[in-house]
Image (cartoon, rainbow, N blue to C red):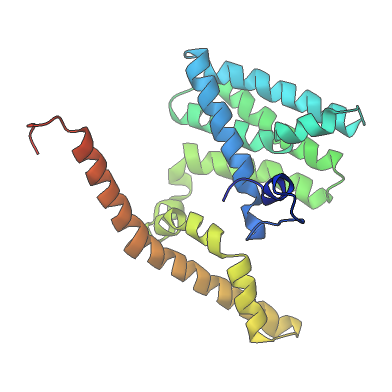
Length: 236
């Protein structure tokens, strides 16, 4: 599901294949990050953050070269998902800080926020969007490092929504648009109200699936995994 369907279509000499849901485009980027992160983790022997920082700097240089029209740089930039590097790098910095990391991680987080805003500026994004990016990084840092400042994020209903957010991601676009289209509302006011109602319904469905399907299945899989790893004759 995470491999770009357009690539598969080309291999099969078929037409222009598209994602089943437009929101799924990010899965391919995430999978490449996981693969590279695992490679750096096992290959660098405790120097993961330093290795990733060098990789992020190299990706930034490739992106600048692509923006400057250097031949072949755009393809390499897309392969390295350079446009989205700052968000992954910022997440790594936050993880290090949450475990007691020092100033290098702080500098890495600040640099990630600045570079994300810089990429938006290079792409001629609206000024409001450029300014919003550092604010989002600051919010993520506050929620991660100073949760008492935002106690609402630790509330049980909010935490439950957070755990169900991946299911919401899988359902919200095509399924939500199909439901919204079915309402047949065209005027701005009723259409906005319908959109909010549909998204609230999709979120409620996501929470229900998480509680009644995802969690029980995960528990069973974990029990089976634990049983398979238990030595024969061991304590159950």
